Length: 462
Image (cartoon, rainbow, N blue to C red; front, top):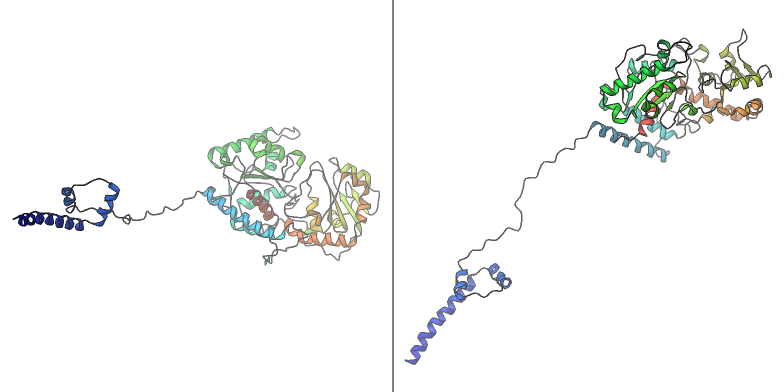
């Protein structure tokens, strides 16, 4: 009986133990692993109930998502222009630092280090200009004060440049101002003097008022002047009074690019932004017949130095006082005697004296280059045209005012080999001072355009 009782008691305990064991084995291992973190006591009833729970496993990876489309970067016209200029600057810098790494294969270009400061850099810069530079010409205003200029006098280059941009088929022109690198104000100071100036009054107020009104007009109609305060705008004039007329607007004088024949630093010309324009006197609209073809190097030149010109300015009186009718080798005249031809005397002279008059520029410099007569520059404060790329010392001689009494001594002291080198270099630079119509590659028009291009490269727009 006692054994039956023990058996009856042990059987339920055995069944209970088996039940608990079965319950434990049926619990998922993830649940068991969580128990040791919960660290709480569970009753058998609770343990048994766990076998009915089906724990939800959280996915370890995020469900796949459809990628968002990448929006294209939209750049403004100004950003596109600045990006292109940045690439051009890099290309020019690479060419300047590695002149021997890229051979210049261009039949129209002579990479002569005696003429150019850095032939490889100039060549790369010129090509970049041809491929990129765009200019917008404002349409406001009416001829003859605007969109017109002289073509048959000492200020010829002023009218020719305006006509080349306005009437020609230049690849530099654009009709879309937002795509332009530079903006041209087609004003003619020479025409203003003809139509607005009262003779002998020396009153430039009407000219200044006209220029000021024109700038106000284009700045009110277009956003480009105000965006840069005129820094990417330029105007061009060969008249002596152009620097004074430009003072009519503060930004035109201080910020804009002024292309001037009267490139006098003592009168506010700033070489870092302004451009020196060669003065070319075409009385008939064309070069004189004696200057049309390059000078023959075998042609004899019995005259050591020659000058003929008006007695004005502070330098010429000193020259005439010192040398007029004083030496047969130094031909200096105020007025040419009858029977003598100005250009014939140039072609017979080794050196042509080029003193400044009232203004620093003189057409005599370009005439000397065309005649093969080495220019002797006598001037103060004159910034020579294209001096940012050309080595003027390679084809000219420069004298100070104090050296005027020693002109013959200095010129005779130049060795014959050096003189021949100067003459040969004149032939190399001649095409850069030819005023073609229509303009041709590397002529004076394109050299002016390249000077404008360099100023735009130096300008960083926001």
